[in-house]
Image (cartoon, rainbow over all chains, first blue to last red; front, side):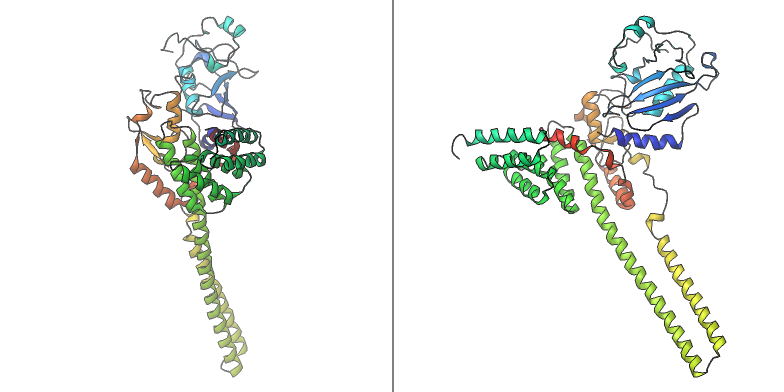
Length: 152
Length: 307
């Protein structure tokens, strides 16, 4: 109901100023945006790489969470992380039904993902990645992730 | 009322509803009218017809229907909601605002705390903006009148000076060259005064003042809009009532702390509400300059008609 209004306000703020390492790539409408993130601290896992995030908003945003995934193309790999599947699906409490809060926004999600990568040291995929990537047909937010640990 | 009429009216009403859903508002209106002939005591028949007539832009008739519906049922949120829309359409923003506030009040007091609150809240803002627009138009007109009056009197003084000089030239008191110089001076003098006057008016125009930004403490953290009915949570943060309720219906936790939070625990934040109202009054219309166009009106009304 208020998604487009809220997103247009977010957009004007994003044009104004963004935290370091976060770039707005595409926001032509209020259904799908692309954002790029970079890890600022020197973490050898993410050196010199830029990751592309796709945000998909429903009419009920920000009451409901946006769908956020990493997208892979020639210039943008999927970052290594024990909570990021190799198809770009992210398992983060912030983005699921229970963990989302309407006070979050595109920028705060980017910052959270950026810091999730910054603090990671494991060059790993979630357990069962291969099977999940092959068989999953669900939308990311409908997946009932089991959070393996809360430290990462 | 002969027995069976109430049933007949119900039948006609549901046929009307079907036409309404299909977008055939004219047939819906006719069927509701027939239903009213069978049973003129059902307030819902009047509000349903009002909704159809809203679509048909028969504003005066919408108002009649709403008032008749209110006569039959006093606490009638839908009637006030449609009434406000018709009143705003015929450019009666004061009446529209009181109707919209009435609808909002009934909505927040109702047990269901339905999602209509957000829709009605938007209508309240729209009425406030319409009311402000009219006031602002009058103000600009008055200003323009005053400016025109002052400019005209400057011009009168200038012309009088010029004709004085001309008569002195004619009488031989001053030479032609000197006279022409004096006239040129008067003219420059007049033009400068006129420009100063225009500058003074331009400077005093609030349009040209300050940076237009709503302070963060008046802005709802969920919609990013200035609040009109803020409620405070246990941790002291305030949100717009309608949007926070939307969140709590899905997830009964505080948006910031994630502690359990229920609708019953919310309290109105009256001082903040006053601060928001005052800010809107002082900063006039630009606060409301939000993108109304993107909201799909049809879907917003649609869920109301299914009440």
